[in-house]
Length: 483
Ligand code: SF4
Image 1: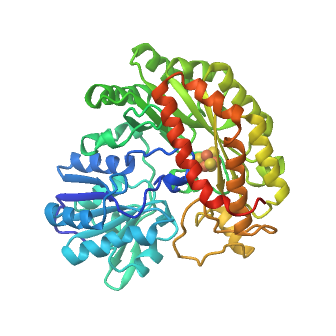
Image 2 (image 1 turned 135 degrees about the horizontal axis):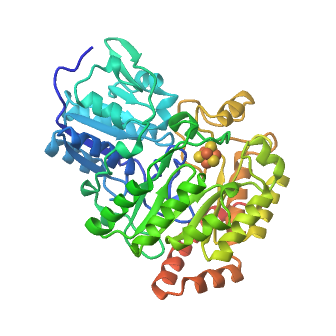
Image 3 (image 1 turned 180 degrees about the vertical axis):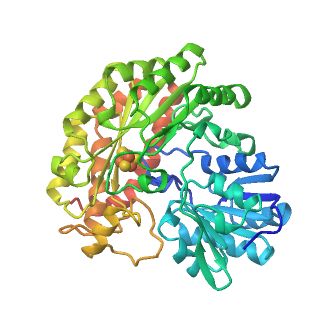
């Protein structure tokens, strides 16, 4: 099977199907997160950059971030008239995302519709069977595969591509990981409306930078290993610095979020990167995610010097046994040390907790809430464990009959339980989440300390606004009795 033409015009979009994080391992509703941050569509910007190198004309549309509707999508299709539509889909929004293919085909039947996203690493054939308007789906790291498709290569030879061939649905070769991340062009930020993406506290322009891909850890709820592999592939510090400089000079962005599955894992690389950034005196600040077992005094010293102001940690549970069962390979003591190191160096900490695993009971959740209180990080989130298809957690929940939604259906997000545990109902889990957030955020001492730490009236006001928004959301759910 061959495409006889090269595709010249590509529309890449986050469809108007709700404002969601569209990462492989985080596919949650933005409004469900305590710190509401709208991040740029880095996935689309990377794909567009690779296509532009081939001479394609690309348009990126992030409809949810702009609060735009299907009418806007259709208008763009009529005006831009793409040869190919790339849809970035998540598991919770799958059906609504793929509505884009249906609408496009009614306007431009010849246009090729391709969807990408973590969900297709499991549901590739199923998706093509169920959604006839989608021509192809891409799994894994799909930048180079999309480029090959657009360049006219036969789908038979394209890694990670599942496609139609007459009545059949076929798979190309296994997806390939991109060995040299430095070889990728910088994301096409000139195609983004950069003013839309702002730091939630300072309201300054914010962007994400992909520093590494892959993770050797084995958390049973996480799909990263399947998509990005178990080996961490690092960009060179020089290459990352060049991208930061481009952001500062060309786009006036000085606030960054490093996107890496385990940013602090390789100590020497991390320190080298931090030294390079610190030497440039760029007046930037940044945040990142980390694991509690990959942070120490030397790392955090250099991170702080290079402008790090916040670190997110997946602490997950206050119960050692739960940590073992979810194969987090981290202990409560490591979490205590990580948060206290942040405190010592004046770096904010954001701890993420999760419950809703088969073994969770009132007692394990109570312990988790108590542990969050003991740690006292600057910010915290409680998510209800979300069984992404293909993960060990999903298989476990399915086997035990704990999934409470039909397989293949759309689920709402991480604040809405789609599983029960062996002893708790979905409603119990939702009540616990509301209760935990309410109880921990509404401590007068916590509120005063958080506002005091801002040392800036506008930032303090942004915190108050965020707290009111969060409080309103929780109040709606608070009518449920305490667990
Ligand atoms: S540490 Fe665990 S949750 Fe984080 S990326 Fe690795 S496998 Fe996923």
